[in-house]
Length: 624
Image 1 (cartoon, rainbow, N blue to C red):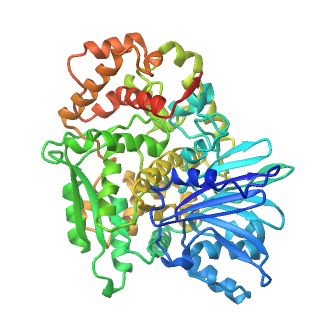
Image 2: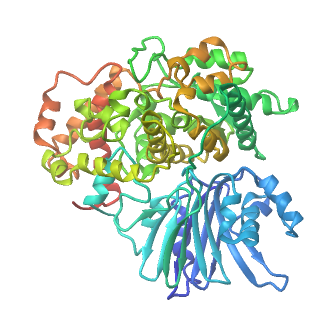
């Protein structure tokens, strides 16, 4: 709650460095529009930007400082996110003699540390990134939640570390330059997030489920959680009942806030299940749950299906689900001007601190969350990671991709010329791509990731492979999308809460055999059975449809016009990265890509547009 920035230097007194640390935090003002705070003493400086969701009074402000009765500072903590079991933790800590001054979960987390030391992370549930300075031991802890819902980056220095919720905070420090080398470019274009890596040279990300301990002698990264492999012995009926109970508990805990919490409702099984459970969990006096969906003008009327990505438009199913559940639903309708808005497009880049090939999908999310904030909502439930947990992606069970010798989603991409070397790479200089070996980089990452997968004795080869695919999806595919969802929602001070990332639910379903998750070949049949009594039949039976990309020809024309302007400008920052033959083909093509798969075909042009803005605005020092 909701932005962290700071600096530790064991060779300097940072007390006079208020301006530097506040400048870092100011870059994160979008994440925390409700307040600010700093703490500086000796070798440490911590800053916080607040999104007030719990204990919205001054007692919920951060950084949280714990002092002895004599006034000596013991430890200081700043937290981004939501500790969803803070009520139960507070009760336990109170019984152990702890006393609290407010009701915030940051204070609860700090007292958990005082009680259990670094093991306190195993007691926390929910979505969080934490920076904690122990004054007694002169030790900094940087930690992230188990699946990486909340981001946290750091930049090691010879005498300490600089850190922040987003890279922009670190780049605001005078000792950090925006250098991107060959490894940074590989990570930028790879469609599989390598844990701990970053695009900017020298920068790192705290790995999900890990804590970085920074001491004067040096730093050490420690794992506090990993996906456990267990034998699943429950019957199908018991498994369905357990999933229903765990998901219901997760939804209830993610609704905890002192401000209204809404729900994203696309009309798919994931968001509809969450919306139905959330609506039931609210007390009658609360009134109906508010649900929200995004749509484009003309999208439903002129929808063109795609066999693997989008079978049906969202709008009719979202309306049907909302009516059945009883939520008060709002469709946020975006027209072409919203998707081509220069400020919204620039925001989608700035929020991610790196270019993206997703174009209108990024912009529509930025616009969607802006409208949510305008409607008075600073927290919203989302179905993120349901497909990773329940094997909802087609490539998770299509043998052509699930049994390939690379990541299944990469295998799918390589079946399409426009994405063969990675989505968004088609316009990048072919020789540079060959030298940087994007394909080899992804394949080596895949082989390395396989060595981490835990297994159970006696698994068949099919069961073993299904576990591997699920592990890869949760640890390599999900983090990319969780990071994007966090950045886009927090662009306007909206905290996205994904109950499907709940630890207990993830651990349980991870060990459910794939045959139970997909009974009789029905996609996500386990989840559908668990919520069958909550939803209308049409929603229960609806096949997965990915987040919508506009199919309006005018948008594709806009992207192509902008690309032509840039590609014919010899002074453009991106000029040296363009592939001559691919650019020439795009310039002489008969119009812009059209249809259901146009977003993939125009991804290369979208990436070039963002690359140029990124290199110019961030002053990128490219050293491939």
